[in-house]
Picture 1 (cartoon, rainbow, N blue to C red):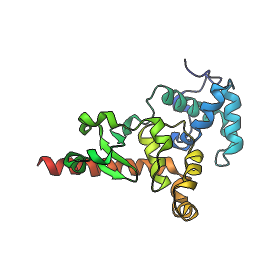
Picture 2 (cartoon, rainbow, N blue to C red):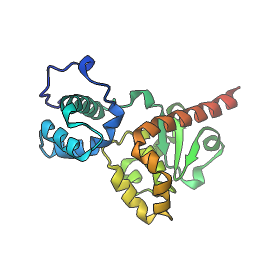
Picture 3 (cartoon, helix red, strand yellow):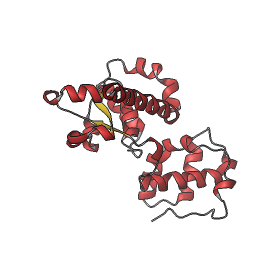
Picture 4 (cartoon, helix red, strand yellow):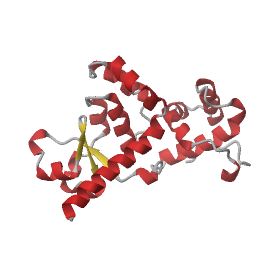
Length: 207
């Protein structure tokens, strides 16, 4: 069932240049409030009050774009262009030559092209594993969340969890401050870098 739209007169062509990427970070709030029965107009007003980077006179466009993003999230079609990677947790005793050749280790996870996972599919990261996992840097966990398309998990919760696992959290926050401020824009660069790296590994091995 799609979210009720109050601004049916707006077409996609009439939207401003408001980027979908700017609103992805609000999915956890939208998901929580919408499932609690809040109207979408109430949710958009809440977003406009909490995000100072959005102009209140842009309300109709925020509504339209946020509606589009949330429907994509529910239908698992958000970021369709960036869907070729997957994260895995592989027990140490099962790390073999294949894993080392085709996968790439990032903090506590392995990242792989979906086409190379094969019989390791049983080790694809689950949501429960993700929430209880320990990552060497919280920024990698934020990126891993996006690889797995768990956009409804609040980044603030993941950063809060890191307080017990990252040795110098304040230093890390300062180090990644700019990256965190525009995490979804940086994620596109991260994805493209990781995708290219894995394709190169595959290419080098098949030449």
